[in-house]
Length: 312
Image (cartoon, rainbow, N blue to C red; front, side, top):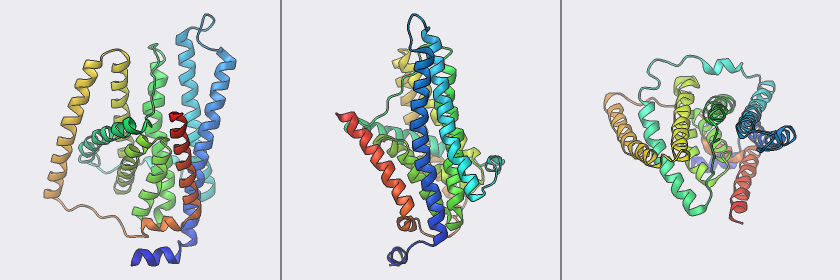
């Protein structure tokens, strides 16, 4: 009954404004990512042409990944800069304050365990829908450095800054739960595939909860980075034809980490009361924010278009 009254009453103007700013950040990031990606590929083609006799493959791969790193970083930093101008948010350093001691103690096993199950479910979804995203690592050793920065470091730092830092801060005055859900939905859709959404939505919710409870982006960034590194190592082992070792490592992760997570949750439930989020508006209030719904529709359409294009 309460939810029906909320939906019929509409969202407050300030919530509409904050949700609209988050929507602009999300759509702006998508546009910047695509435009800067095209620009990077054009510069690479004009500068080096392609791997061949005139351009050693190692040089071409290093340049390709370096430009991808620059384009991805600028695409994430542009909405951060714009949001600071619109909303007067604090400097980026304020989001990276030192978290309380022990912030990661219980979060590490829970996230690593849940992440392996999420990866397993995402793999099943990708297999049945054909919506997986394949990443090819470079063949040359020097190019692995910019590839590692692009795939592991940059998302862990700048995605946390944009989603859990900027977007969650914009929505935070209207309730912690609403802020966590609002940014997590946009975060998941911006992963661009059905399988990516399956994994990224719970991850975005968990990182948002960590940011809310710790008051810092560091815990979420560390776990985000750890998951990216694990995926990078598994992919590298497969690319180097160490399939057996990759399968052993994956089997250990999918077995040990969930058990570790279950033990950590049981221990936490027995030893202390869980901390509750501060009250605020229900996340359902976002359904009364046209700009946020428009961004969700645009991002969902982009995911659907990519999926359909992959099936043609």
